Image (tube, rainbow, N blue to C red; front, side):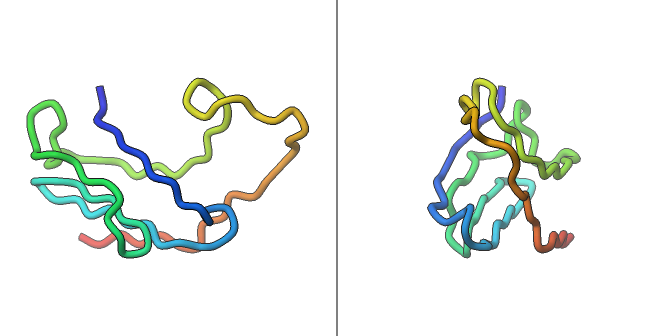
Length: 87
C-alpha cells in the first residue's frame, strides 16, 4: 500500500552520511548529504502526511526485500552517531 522509492549510497557502509527527512503537510522529501534523493507526491487520503508518524531505525536482513544472507556472515555493527528532530 505504500509508495516507495530507493537510492544507493555507495559509501553507506564505509562513511558517515547525513540522512534527512523533511516532512510537511504537503509532501515528504528524503535527502542524503544535502541532495534530495526521493520525494513523495501530493498529500491525499491514502497517504496522509498530516497524520502522526513514527521514526523507526532498524537493520533488517534477509527475506524477500533484502535477499539472501551470505552463509559466512557472523556479525556486523549498525552505528548511528546522532538523531535530531526539529518541529
